[in-house]
Image 1 (cartoon, helix red, strand yellow):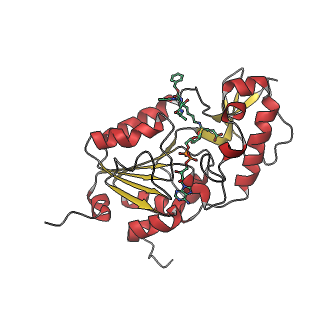
Image 2: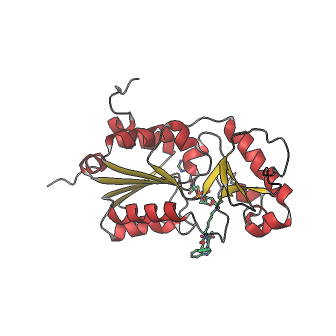
Image 3: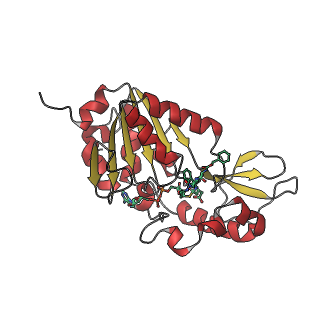
Length: 250
Ligand code: BJW
């Protein structure tokens, strides 16, 4: 008996989960964190992506985030974002779990998604804890302040901080109950996101990885496809990489 293909597994599954990382946005021109050209090659994470760094120098941290917001605002979702948004329209139960804070999945049309590490496009008041959307580019003053006078911070998850409770609950529930998990463009080094494929596998899911290179996850995955997500995902998903109802040549 022949084994079902990945596409057949997705079509037959009641629950599909996609986990993405910075590599999915690389072809949009957004730098990844690790590896050649990665942000952590140029900047130290502990100077920019920790609560201690923000407490020490909020202006420096905000300059880095303001630069990234400007860079991302000028970029577009790529074929990988589009393929994942299209896959959602075919799957019965679906959840996109992204570690990315750039908002490109949403701009590509993904709806059923959780942003595990927050969003660059939201700010949080340090005094009131109120979170608001903020799409201003460039920001008029750094560091930005709330109407109450307190500092605003980016609504992202820095090292040592807990992930948003509801997002992580949904992600763990989905990992435990999915039949297929597609993992794309993540080094699978940062916890707790990196545990999700292991949890899925332990609960019997078929795990497929797409990455430029082998990762910490490759030995565990049922299939590892090496190449650019924007090339591999449309090929792997075939007709599922096109929104339901639209012919593939549109
Ligand atoms: C392509 C491609 C193309 C390129 N196509 N592929 C041991 C065990 C458990 C935890 C820890 C531990 N030691 C330390 C920790 C804690 C820490 C952690 O995991 N550290 C590790 C580095 C060791 N984790 C935390 O601190 C987390 N919080 C936590 O644990 O809280 C506990 C707690 C509980 C209760 C109360 C209080 C606390 C928080 C982690 C937050 C991560 N934040 C960041 C920054 C977000 C904001 C911002 O963007 O500024 O999130 S760090 C950064 O890494 C960012 C990313 O989302 C995250 C993951 O990176 P990702 O997406 O995998 O990117 P890369 O660059 O690593 O990989 C890109 C991949 O793409 C590569 O593999 C390329 O090959 C590939 N690629 N182009 C396909 N075209």
